[in-house]
Each structure stands twice: as structure tokens, then as C-alpha cells.
Amino acid sequence: MTSATNKAIEIAGLDYSFGTDETAKQVLFEIELALEPGEFAIMTGPSGSGKTTLLSLVGALRRPQGGKLNVLGHDLNTLESPELEGYRQQLGFIFQLHNLFPALTAFQSVQMAGDLHPEAAGQMDDRIRALLTQLGLGERLDYRPHQLSGGQRQRVAIARALVHRPALVLADEPTAALDGENTKIVLGLLAELAHERGTTVLMVTQDNRVFESADRLINLVDGRLDSDVRLSE
Amino acid sequence: MSPVSAYTRRSGPSRPVPFSLQLVSHKKTRTAVAAAGIGFAILVMFVQLGFYGGVLNTALAVSGRFDADIVLISPRFAYLGATGTIPASRLYQAQTQPEVVETTPIYFRYANWRDPVNGANCRLFAIGFPIAAETDTSPLILPGVTEQFEALKPTSTVLLDRMTRDKCGPLDPEGWVEVRDQRAQVVGDFKLGVGFLADGAMLMSDDTFSRFFANHPLDSPHLGLVRLAPGSDVDEVAEALKQTLPKDVRVITQSELNDLQTRHWVENTAVGDIFGMGTLAGFLVGLVVLFQILSTDIRNHLPLYATLRAMGYSRRQLTRYVIEQAWIYALLGFGPALFLSLGAFPLIQDATNLPIYMTPSLVLGILALSLTMCSLSALISARRLQRADPAELF
Image (cartoon, rainbow over all chains, first blue to last red; front, side):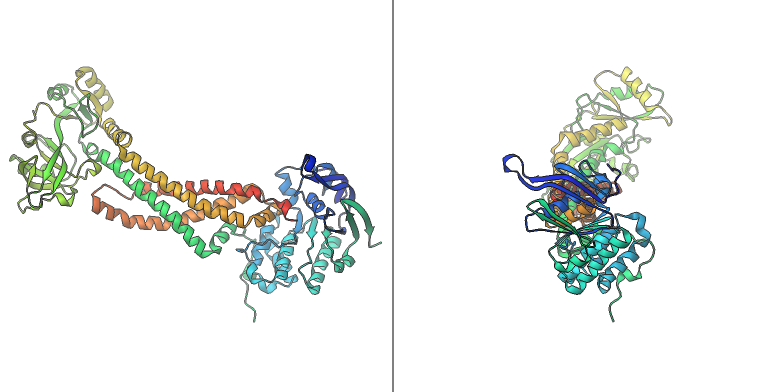
């Protein structure tokens, strides 16, 4: 179900608990947050503060239990298959683990994301090649994960998340396995997507190197929004 | 100089990743072992269904060659090995129908056969019929039999099926053997093949049949063949004969006799069940082998499948990938199994004289069965995909 809103992400009174009844443990409390299209937001907070839970809720990987959650015009409280898959295809996920199939080459791993967008089939090969080249993997298009270093695998996973030019990127510590130069390249890519293509980026990170690329810094503590600072202002 | 990537040579719209093929071909040793296991299961199905086909061929080996449109049988008829007898007079009565051009009495019995040279004992199916009249022809459509009628006229002479087991002989250069402890001479041969019915078959005159079988009365044949004029309506004449003839005979068409024979061999004997169960066993072995391979693979790749789910792949698409992998395994196993079966069938035929043939319908049937087996296995394995929870990825 879609709803008319000009916000990329609109969260109001969002609660979330793990478990049920007496064993239930609430991890998010009354979250209020809104992100505009093209905003690059960083979410920080101590371990267990609910950052990744919030990320998975925005990604429709979990179903909201209370409150309102609208993303890219979709009401995630009511989203069901096949609209759910259609919604996820508009996103780009970057996980801490690269999760690449050992049988697929770098090119094919990225192409798996491209295959979900047949409307861009005519340009997808070129786009994959360009993106992997930009990420320093132009010479390793047909390398399989076991032939790549940890950082290279992570860059393949990043290319997989970005190749279809998603409307929203959800990233969990994407630069943790990268050196300074590659971190700069990845952040440049994300900033370019945000500022030139209107992609909204919501990134969980503790990496200080990232902060200068971001527009907003959101801090969660014990499941509550502790601060929300606009860095560009 | 850096190596040229395969992808730099591409042009035009991208083709989807051959994901299933990539997963299957990635670990070659595992794939080879899996294909061997599935191929073995398919080979078992080939052999078992080959034998099952042999049962069907056995059922129609004799009745399918009758030169008749209508057959008169005893109400006690079970199959060609247990026929009961009918009064020969019914054949004469049948000739009163204007469409009937010829009737022929046939005599059947199992006979003990002994080769006096090597002492081998066999059980042969004996078929007797009249040969005295100039107009008599072979009641079974078998090339070269009518031409050998002169040789069959002396009593105690027989024609021997070339498909009879080798051990039955005859080893004697002049063809002397013992049939039911009486001397008999093989004076010629023919090619029939009676499969599971007996060790072999022999044709003889009705007089010789009567002599071998304790003066079996020639007015009590075991079957009566009725041939109609070309263009006659078989069902209509059969109906007329049913109305005309007394209830001590049953009137059935040739195709109804074939149905009776098939039903007997498939439903009333253990042979049909044995090979049916053998086929099922092969099917289950293949199903379990592939289930082990696919479910282990899914379990090992669960976070990766969860990633695909997060990217927007539906569970249906992932299930389709598992089914595609299963089909690839099915084809990898099918090829070698067909190749081995093509080699094994003639060897089994030579060793057993059973009518087992590799037919296009058998090949297509096993292919369909293999794909069904692998699809089922894939669907069961794919239930594990439910555990691929993208929420666990962050």
C-alpha cells in the first residue's frame, strides 16, 4: 500500500519488542524521525541501542508492531508480498557481512541485483562494469569471493547494493572492512547518489571518517532517539 | 598486462545470471557424486521399468500375434496358461455367421522338456493347431511358420522358438529331445519370445499335441480363433455370436483378449508388483539422495539466500532456483543412466531371453519420472528456505 508523502522516511511513535508476553524485551520506544529524499544520515549509538533493529524495520525486514512507518510512500505496517518484494527492490542493503555466493563472480554477484530490474537491462552490464571499476575492482570482474580480499568482497557487496540506483540505501558498518582510500571512494559514491540522484542514505556506523560526508547525525540510546543533529547547517 | 575479463567483451542487453547452473557446477566433485547417486537411481528405474515392460510384452507375446478378430474362450479362462477348454462344435456354429471366413481351434499347455544330451529340464509353452488341410495357415502371425507345415506333419515333430533359453537345447545334431517323457524332434524354428510365461515355446500339429498330452481330445480346444471378412464390424459380429452361442463359451474380441492378458500379468501376478516396487525404490533413492544434496546446500547458504530475499527476490523465485538445480542434477544423472541402460538391456536380454526393449516411450517415461522425482525433492528441500530470514542479516 502506498501513501502520499514527500518524505523518504517518516517514522512516528514507533515501538518494537523482541519476544512476547512476560519474556518480551522492548528495544525501540516512541521513535519519531523523518528523512528527506537525498539526505545522508548517520545513526550512531552504543551497542544494544536499537540501531540495527530500526534499520531492519525501515528495510521491511521486520514488521512494525506499534506506531507509524512510511518509507518511500509505502506504509510498512501493512505491506505484504508481492508489494513487499517490490519495495525491497527499491532499496540497497549493505550488511556488515558481504554474503556473496562462492559460485558467483564479482560481476555476477552484482548482476543478481541488476536482474531484478529488467527495465535497465540494456545498460546494466555497462553500469556494473563502471561501478566495479570505480570501486577498484575493474581487473577482478570474474574473480570469485575466495580470490578476493575481505575489503574487495565488501566492495562487491556495496556495488551490489548500489547498481540499481536505489531510492534508499540502508547500510550497517559498510566501511568497517575498508582502508582509508576505499572508504573515501565508497563515501564519495554514497554522497554522489544522495546529492545528485536524490537517494536517501541511512547508515549505522561508529566510523568517525564517515561523519564529514553526512548531512545528519542521529543518536539512539537505549531504544530512544537521543539526538538528531543536522551537520550541514 | 592484466587478464582480459570475460565481461569486457559483452555487448547488448545483459542476460540473467545462470544462477542455478553456477551453483551446481561450482563444486565439481560434489556435483559428480550427486550425479552418480541420481544416475544410479535412474538406472534402477530403467532396469525395473524395462522388466515391467517385459511383463507387458510377455502378456501380449502370444495373444498379440493371433491372426483373429474374435476369440472364443472358456468361461474358466484366466490367461493363456490357464484357459479351460471349449467345445469345438462352437467353432462350427460360429461359421454360420456370414461375416466369419475361418475358425481355428488352438491347443495350449505347459510341457516338460528335456534335452537328453545335457539332461537340462525346461518348461516350454506348447501350442498346437491344425495343419492337415491345404488351406491351413499359421494361426499366429509369425514369419516362416506356414512354410514349415510339411515338416510338422509327421507326429512328434515340433518347431522351437529361437528365443528359448539356451540351456534347453537341443544339443542333439538331429534335434531329438524329450517332451513329457516322449521322444520329439525339432524340425524347424521360429522367433517368438514368451518372456516370463515359460523357458520357451514350441509349435506343433494338433495331432502331435494330442499325442504328447495324453490323447487330449481334439474336440476340446483351449481357444477358438475367428477370422472375419475384411470390412466386417467386429463388435457387431461378436455381439451376434454372444447371442447365438451357448454360455459354455465366452465371445471376446482380439483386443479384449489382450486386455485380459495384460490385466492378469499386471494385477494377478507378483511380477508386475515386484518391478513396480523396484521402480518406486529407485524413485525414493533418487529423491532422498537429491534431498540430502539440496537441503545441505541450502543450509550452508542460508544467509546468502536471506540476502537475496532482502534484495527483493521472492520465495517463489528462490524455490524456482532450487527446482532448476534439481533439474540440472536430473539431466546430469539421466545421460549416464541412459547410456548404461542401452548397454545393459541387450546383455540382460541375452542372459535371460526376456523381451526387454529400450523404447522411446520408456526413455521419455523415465525422463519424466526423473524430473518429477527431482522436482519433488527440490520442493521438499526448498522448505528450508523459510528459514532464510533477512531480518537476521543486520
